[in-house]
Amino acid sequence: MQKRSVDVAVIGAGTAGMNAFRAASKHSDSVVLIESGVYGTTCARVGCMPSKLLIAAAEAAHMTQTAHVFGVHLPRAAQIRGHEVMARVQRERDRFVGFVVEDVEAIPSEKRIMGKAKFQSKDKLLVDDRLEITAKAFVIATGSSSFVPEVLSDISEHIVTNDDVFEWDDLPDSVAVIGPGVIGLELGQALHRLGVRVTVFGRSRRVGPLAHPDLQQQAATIMGSELDLRLGVTIDRVRSHDDQAVIFYRDAAGDLMEQAYDKVLVTSGRLPNVMGLGLKTTGLKLDKNGVPNHDRYTTQCGSKPFFMAGDVMNEHLLLHEASDTGRIAGDNAGRFPDIRVGHRRSNLQIVFTDPQMAMIGLSWEEVQKFDHAVGSVSFENQGRSRVMNKNKGAMKVYAEQGTGQLLGAEIFGPSAEHLAHLLAWAHQHKMTVPHMLDLPFYHPVIEEGLRTALRKANAGLRFGAPPIKNCLDCGPGA
Image 1 (cartoon, one colour):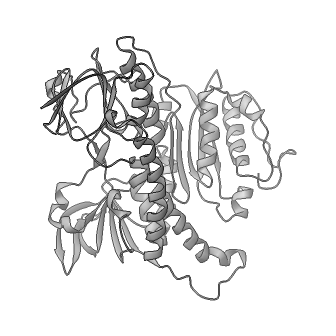
Image 2 (cartoon, helix red, strand yellow):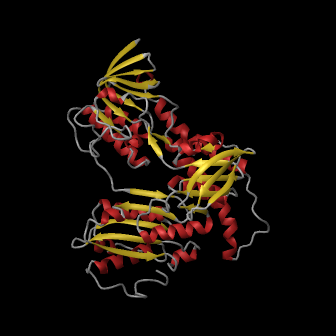
Image 3 (cartoon, helix red, strand yellow):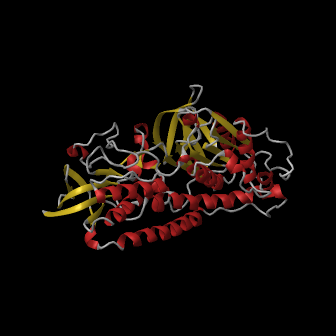
């Protein structure tokens, strides 16, 4: 067996692992990157990019179905060719993956190790039982994997996850989506708009990540007006019949129902990839999921030379979070034992449904710990939203009484991806509502809806008078 001694060993060559490798390499030339699968990040291969490609196709199809609102009538119904949709998704996806693979392969070959890593002790691991690596510090960046509930085991041949969807050669006729979370809603709505019969099943009545009760209710109502949402249901059993998956479930009233589908897309959660890592041999304290306990700001596990990064931390499964934690973990692993707090940015989550959803800063539940004011706006009559026929949803902004500081916001509406960035920047810079209202707002834009919400929050903070209806510096529908 080969033996090797290094300063830092990074396990996982995804977004977090790559950033950890680069950060650790600033402190030492003795750093290795270990990967058990193919190169290319979750985002590029099976996450952010291919899902947005599928959503873009769905948006194009949806525009042909709603053009009549503007007086634009197509001579015939749009023809959706599933094999062409998937061909573009895969072609562009492979292009993005290629960029990532180029970055990994630019690392000297002696620092790249392919194989499955397993810890043998607090300072030693084996790679495929052929290479023994001793390191002064370790970064665990092994990512996460889709979780498939045991109740679905009898229809395994019909089960797909988001890892599988983007390998389809064509679109199926019907899909059951298990879980109305971020991935389930994004892919479920996209497939529906591309002509697939879709049903989204959820154990609870919660739709997406929104926390404010009003926004949750709107999300369930508005998304349910387009999608076949079955909320508050329990899957009783499943079976295969005539090359389809038959799902027997109890609806919210407790009645037993059944429906057959070509595919069952499971989006009910992801599990951190810690199985088989041999973490018990390290002496680290593990939580109920087998994930080492770690500090959010240093990513260190206790006082030991172990650091966590990316999705395996089981926190926010987002690319920018993986990047940040990777840099923090790699920097601290490289400088160990000189541990430093890393920069964690304001919470920012976006769901690319239509309407879009976004969470910024503190959630509604977290805001309850503060004496706070709430500002809101409905997009139903907001000028620019109505112009674009995107006038659905609402926004809530939360501010602290006394200081006026923005605590957080939740959005269910048009252009949430852009509004969310403005709010996240304001939150990170600890801006106050009055300061935000001093900034320029053009007319007519959706951002005027944000101004309305801020004005209402400002009135609740008692920093200013209640908003004036039809104010002189606002255009119609602002």
